[in-house]
Length: 107
Length: 118
Image (cartoon, rainbow over all chains, first blue to last red; front, side, top):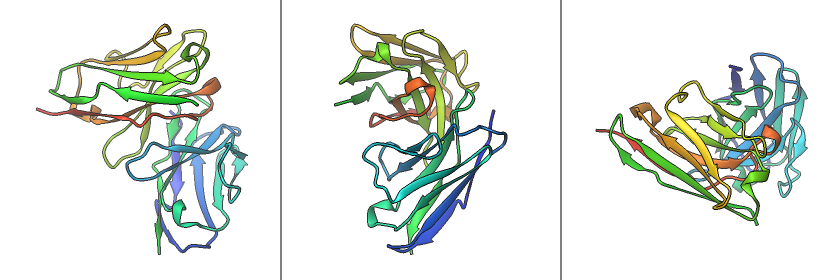
């Protein structure tokens, strides 16, 4: 299975900050990389698919980049509703696998 | 509007069985790939099983292969996951989700909790 490693595991930031989360795959996955946001007690929500495509309805402050093995999710200016846990997921190979998550907390 | 509604979770003893259902509305499940993703308490996400849209191809995580069975009833527009030989490590919230072209999960249900304990 392809291992997905996110960093950092947790992050404290303030409203208005620019934040970057990194995801690394154990082998090349081209751009078959997706990002999800999960708030406590809720289902994950798709933010970015195919590494850099913004899902419909997702604010433009979210962006994704990368290819091969290294990917980033950037939030350009944190809003209060952005404090949540973020997961990356590879869909290059079955079984699809997720990163362990990055918990974004209010500083 | 696409909606997914899971049901069937509950408390079951180790070795027991449950059948989870995922009722869909706003689209036809026969036209879309769909999957089940689970999340153990306080843990990450795991793709458990999936179904391609039209071809009927299925896949299972190694951790559930031989114990879980995915199926669907197109007439009821419902996806199922039969969980047999349950283990304590199967305790999780189980989500169904649409999985277009098996590339990402875009619509999710609210989840149903399965607790395996004696």
